[in-house]
Amino acid sequence: IDNDEFVSDLKALTSEYFGTIAKKKSLSNITEATKATLARWALVMTLMISFFGTLPLYIHGNWIFIVLTPVLAWLTIANYWHDATHFALSSDWKVNAFMPYLLPLLSSPSVWYHQHTIGHHAYTNIGHKDPDLAHAPQLMREHKSIRWRSTHSNQAHFLRILLVWSIASGIGLNILSDMRAVFKLTYNNAVPCMQRSRSNLAAHLFGRLFYVSVAYVWPFFVFPIWKALIWSFVPNAIFSMCFMLNSQINHMVGPCIDASSKNFYKHQIVTAQNFGNDSRLCYYFSGGLNYQIEHHLFPTINHCHLPVLAPGVKRICQKHGVPYNVVSGYKEALVAHLAHTSEMAVRP
Image (tube, rainbow, N blue to C red; front, side, top):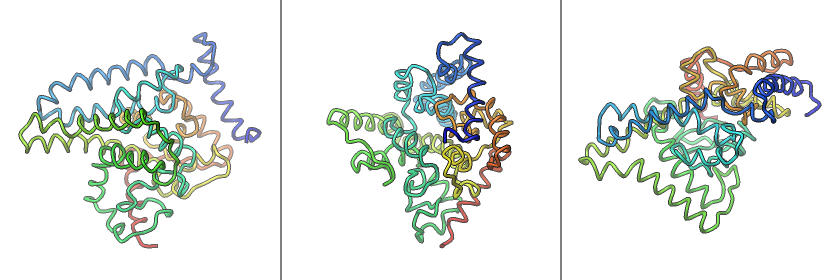
C-alpha cells in the first residue's frame, strides 16, 4: 500500500501542509505540527471554564442550566476529549492520556480505546468487527450483520429513536457496554478487551460508580423526588442526544454502510460521510466530526487542521475515482440516516 499512488498523494498533501507549519514555527518534529494549535487550546479552555462555571447554578437547580450545562458538557467533550483519545491533542502522550480522565462523561477512556480507537477505526463498517455496528442489537439494526428481530420493525419510529438516543451514552456506553466489556473481555463480541489486574479493575469500577453518582444519584440528595427524577434523566438525555446526532450520521447512511475497499485508506473514505463543511455551526457543535472522512484518514491529526486538508483530500479522491461522500448539513445528514434506519427495519 505504501507504493500506491493514491496513498502517496495523501502523504504528499499532509507532508507539505505540516512541513510548512513545522518550518514556520521552528519545530524539531513535524508530528508536533499535527496537534492542537494555540487557538484550539484557547477554545478548549474557554469551553471547560464555561462548563465548570455553570455547575454551581446547575447543582442549585436553576432550570435554564438543565439544558445549558449538558450542551456545554457536549461541546467541551466534542472539542477536546475525542482528540485526546486519539493522541491528537498534544505531542506529549501524558497530556493525551490524562485529559480524557478529567471529564469521562462520554465513556470510560480505557474502554473507549478498545471500542472506538482500536475497533471502530480499524474495521469501519465491517460486520462482526466494528463494535459500533452492534450497539443494542435487540433495539436497533443498522447493519445487515445484525440478525433481524421483530423488535426492529418499529426502530424508525420517533419514540424508539428518542429512547435509544436518550440513553445511548449514559446507560449504554457508560454502564451496560462498559460492564460487558470488563467482565466478558470483549466489546460487543467484536473487539477483545484486556484482562485487568485486581487493582486496575477496582479503580475502574470505582470510576464507574463515581460516574453513576455524579450523573444520576446526587439529585436525590438535594431535590424533592419529582425534581430529582427530572434532573437525573433530562441532562443525561440531552448530552446523549448531542452525541448520537453527531455520531450516527457519519457512517450509518446508505452510501457508506456497505461500502468497502481492500485499500485501507480508500476504505476509510468510502465508509464515512462529511456534513456541513461550509458551516461553522456544524464544525463547532460536532467538534470537527463533520470532517469524518479526513478524521478517519488521519485520526492522530487534531480536528482543527482538517478543514484545511479537506479540499486536498477531495481533489485527490476525484483524481483517483474514489467516492467522497458529503452532504450540506445536519438536516440532509439526519434525513439520510433515518432513511437508512427505516430500510434496515424491513425484514430481509
